[in-house]
Length: 454
Image (cartoon, rainbow, N blue to C red):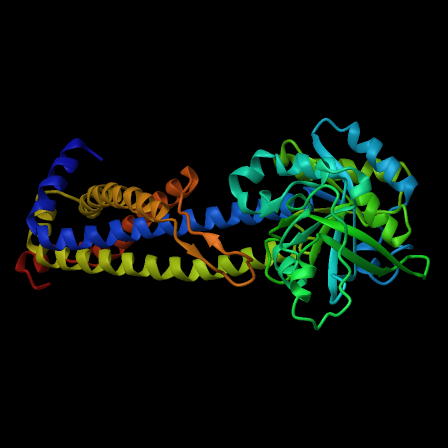
């Protein structure tokens, strides 16, 4: 394209100001909407990613006993990692330079009570020092501070084993009437026995200590029970688990189930971009060590169903919205370009008679639309920038289905989102303009000069 075409195109834009302004507004607002959607999805994806990897302790790589993911709940002793398995995996993980953190975890179910009422629990046992390191991770601080920080109390690592520290999800703490934690009472406080659970002061007595009782079936086939102290309340992140989740030191949960096994072993990588390579290396090393295990990436639907399901749903929803936005932009550009070329059909005929080819005519209209699109994108970018700042400053809190305690609405498009939206807008502008100009540019010169296209 020659410089003369750009200057001619710039002058032509001023000939239909109202129409061009209307078209430019549609393009600009469409661009801003693309950025808003992309910025929102980026935030949600990052939150879900960090929540899955660090908040639910899945890790970037998860190692189960062979068939353990499907069969652990029915035969935990047979389909769990034993002491030998854990020792081999720990040694392997310690020798991998890209592994930042690693450790075993145990999950299980049972009943938790306050002396008067018992409800089901879903327990997660983890080494307290590993829990501390995960909560201190920059990713947790950046993306899921509400999951990282405790609602009340201190971490499990702050207490000796003799305390029997247990963390209760906020919903479960309310159900049990244990909203106060261990540190809210004096160091020598003792468990209060409630003789009459129907008495007027029963709730007050239940709340006057942090003691809870756990009952579960041990892996040896016997019933087991132990006392614990609610040292911390936390947000589990999901509505369905916030009224049943507890976390406790791995050894304490192993004591309850009378085992030294673990359900799975997780690895957290320094550089997750090499996940496939690390996954292959882990599989190879463990196979060479003679272990019968299954190794999963965190993106596998089997270990992260909430993440994969939510991302798939958001993908379908946003794709539909983007198609609608693209359609609005296409129709706006097509209508504007069509009306312009019809009104300027005699001008096109004059140009053709002076030696301009059909290609030159198409280029001229494309250049005009490129200039209009550029101005619209710049304007839409400014609207998006200040609009996103305003939304983020309002700190809008909303409650999407399944998310405990809700989310903070934040829109922060990445550079890749901005680049992708810009490319899409310009491609739509060029293709739509070519489609609108193509038919008239092919008309006979005489017909064009007669203005019969009007």
